[in-house]
Amino acid sequence: MIIAPSILSADFGKLSDEVNMLNTSVCDWIHCDIMDGVFVPNLSFGIPVLQSIKRCATKPLDVHLMIVQPERYIQTFKDAGADILTVHIEASPHLHRTLSHIKNVGLKAGVAINPHTTTEQIYDILYLADLVCVMSVNPGFGGQEFITHTFKKVEKLKNKILQESFNTLVEVDGGVNQDNAALLKKAGADVLVAGSFVFTSPNPIQTIASLKQNLY
Ligand code: DX5
Ligand code: ZN
Image (tube, rainbow, N blue to C red):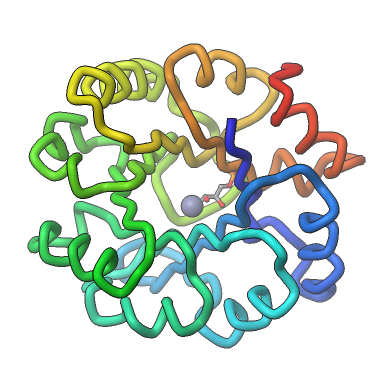
């Protein structure tokens, strides 16, 4: 299981300490949520903060763009330090072109789907996607409740990927905690994003290790 703590729930007043904590932990990636206040009803952080994270981080940056017209910023996010760049299908009328562009600049390309978007809607683009981010909350905020319908979506998507022999990873983002981590693994998730569960826990390093080892 790939574990990607979401830095959105970190204390930005001591960002380098938080990134160093993640460096010390057994997490695999650092999930960075970019929100524009248009695609989602919230603003998070942008390029300068991402660059600061990159300067401290020893793990790949998994950058989740919750912005309209994400195709405008592909090179910018590459230059800022993204390793995986994920765009929303709901924000991308030319998804084939956008994913191709992301791959052409040398990044891993991800596509995120909102809770109301069906898995079938990405079948014709799966061969191009290194990762599908299945949103298990409505994007925009950390600390929301997990939508249990996600289990079915993950299972269905994973079966399709296996059937087609693709290497696409299935990531689950939103409300991941001790109550759903094992069930998500069983359903076929490859990557778990966890924000508030990690950063509000008394011992984030231990919480990350427990998620990694499927102890929940
Ligand atoms: C939601 C973001 C998530 C969020 C996860 O819009 O995409 O990555 O930070 O936070 P938790 O784990 O607290 O739901
Ligand atoms: Zn996210």
